[in-house]
Image (cartoon, rainbow, N blue to C red; front, top):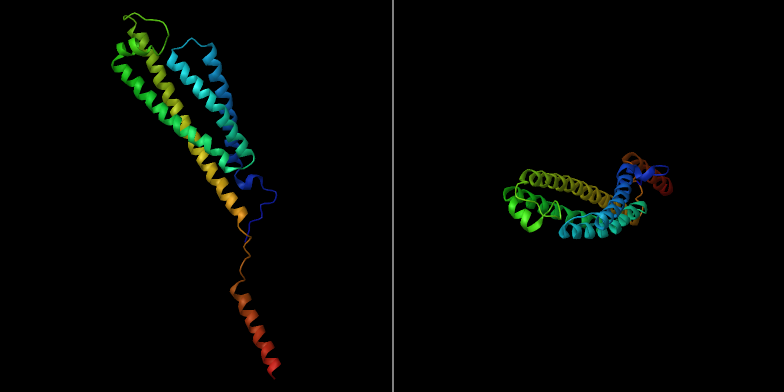
Length: 197
């Protein structure tokens, strides 16, 4: 028997769908902020390239996530899901890199200059380690957010796929109960008996 979903918002899944829409909109805003940081922030080249790529990809992926959730279309969530998975990998690399830079911070100063585009003298080890620690914490937080976004998107994607499959299936008529079938059989026998005699 098909459930009566008339008058029910989002088929009982309001929080999931609305959270996905909100996540998509936040991703668009975050992408715009990354592009602004790329333009106005004085940062190393590698960090600015990362901000540019992330901002360019965040805006369309967030739009597809919000638009696809609003129109309950599963395939529009795939770009956001794939991008969230890719971000998890990038953030893990960033965490490993910053932790390794803690161990050999002189190499990080000479080769990458992660925290500032200007040269720092060797006596600023404390400042260098504090900024590396800030980057490590930031990468960990971003990794946790990316994992949550991926799990939310995957759950919403599965829900929409199940919903689309349910719409394509024909309505199933509820089978009669055992007592109804037995009563019908007895009635048929009585009709046959009366016709015979």
